Length: 258
Image (cartoon, rainbow, N blue to C red; front, side, top):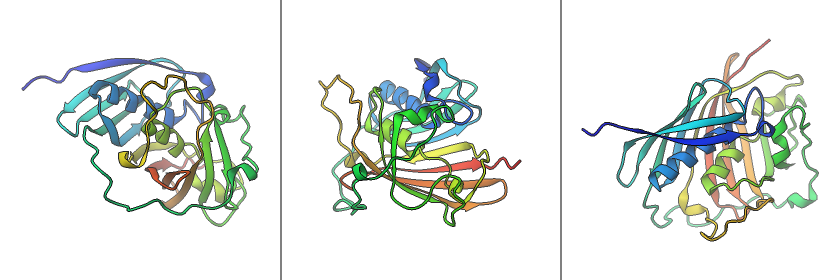
């Protein structure tokens, strides 16, 4: 058996992407997706990431090991001492067979909705996202339902693939339990799993080397599906502005009750 060899990809996280207690988790996952896709020249369709310690800003080395090749490569990627991920990719996406069409979305025009203001000095990476709430839920408003429904877009000069963009946006909202609380409680993610349907997203032309500062709007529904005194699971569904599924995610979180 040929031994598995690791390839190292350099990356650097700017401090402006800090979230709660470290670099934004979606960006960390996106960096591992990027390394895996570069190594295999395949398209990511699934990722399960374990976030063991906060990712600090600055230069890092993303390590990639190809555990299985073929049409659906399996890759293990890691940011040493902070995160590791098992990533499945595909070389043959095939034609779309289900669903037959796009889903109907909220008809509220995001341009006519006031943005959700998140202090940049509190959550620095909030400067890169534009959130327009659709339902009544707001962080720390003491509401009844742990669910956010929003229009959202990225405001960043970083070039993301559709899957990398989806990873960032799927982790962009705060824990959905925040909608039911009236004071801050730390609820960090310890596991992030996501799926990216490759047939429902369009890629930029190969010769498009100029990053777009303002990305298109996406519809994001983010809710807590169960919670205990110490753990909870959030699930998210991300759709393009035309109603096509762009990604789904589940996050296992710890609740650090004071």
